[in-house]
Image 1: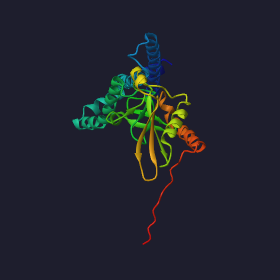
Image 2: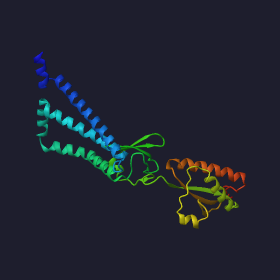
Image 3: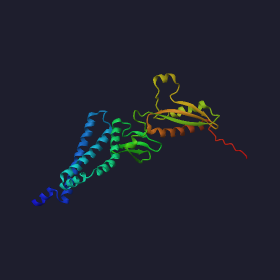
Image 4: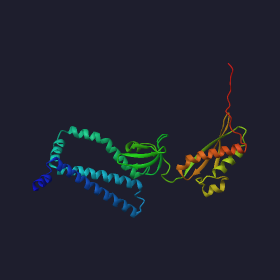
Length: 284
């Protein structure tokens, strides 16, 4: 029996190395869980703005990665057969080091970009961001390698940190949740513009998320909370635009749709002239 124990401790067989590796990675996993748990407790206890949800996510991912890397290095150092093979590999020509360095270049750039995102906070976990017309959604996670965005179609968009850090990003929630909603309306050329503006204001003020974002000076000098401008006079319609402040960016699209429906119904009820498509037919 003692002979088998000595052979196991000497790590000179496949099964002894296998179970020893499992033991090392299990201990590493336990340490990772404990460290991340106490880290979250510490941050919540301090209640400081320096550490937000984004920093917690990134630190937890970093701890898991670096502890796993340390466990791998510890295994190579303590297992004689692995150590001898690693010595042969790393003592070879510098070509291998160059290949590894080139392969790790992208991973390192993603890691550095992820650190910059967490430190400078162009966006955070939970922010509503827009990169372009197709890449819009909520930031779900920021890992060491990539940023995960949950789109409004409930699809997960995964973008490497090195790419997203160089993009121009529209962040709707980085400072506050107020957003100015542009709402365009078209009325007929013979429509009563003042009546149309009155209807639009009345219908917009019925929605819960509409707020008055005017300064005290603007309240004294301006007649209306909602500004409506006469944008253009076209061949077949008049273009009006209502500027409405909304306190919830996630509700802005739904608000625009509901407002257009409500205004259209009021226009029909009160006889506001609606645009009619005009076409000229030429006989050749």
